[in-house]
Image (cartoon, helix red, strand yellow):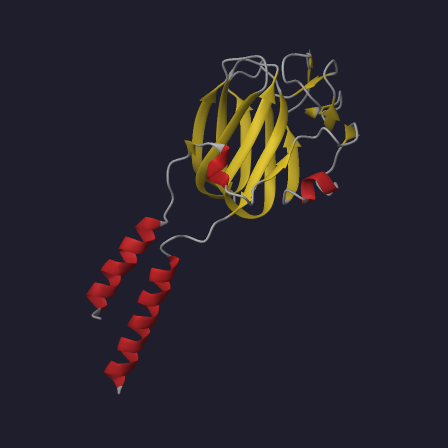
Length: 208
């Protein structure tokens, strides 16, 4: 294999599993390894990243942007969810409780490409931004068309933090049904490894 051929193969494989624009998918796209947290069995009150419900998801950091005293109303498909208390602390709340936020940020212990979430109680437009090592790598705008539970599943470029925020600061919501999946082995990886091995063998042979 010539160096030029190897570089062409490398470019092809890199493209095969390179970053794609974030897109909405279905839960079935997550495969059987998806982990879902709906908060229904979680205790009410303030939560920290080291709570078992978050460590099971691989979440190591949680932040919200302030407190909105709007009530988390009891609508169709309403259930226990993630909101905030009057001090802005992240808190698991029941329908009927006041305490919503216009922005949530979640950091992960390792990178992934798939993330799902639901929001309650607000018909609004959201920005979903994905970061890797502090750099914005992907983003998607979504719109909820109901005040009931609206659920989204997203496949994005490899990320270790996601920020979900309303495009209007006056619109706040509770977060629910967090869904994550470990990063899959790229389909082109075996070809990439083979190409590397062939190139190393060619270089070694040329030196003999």
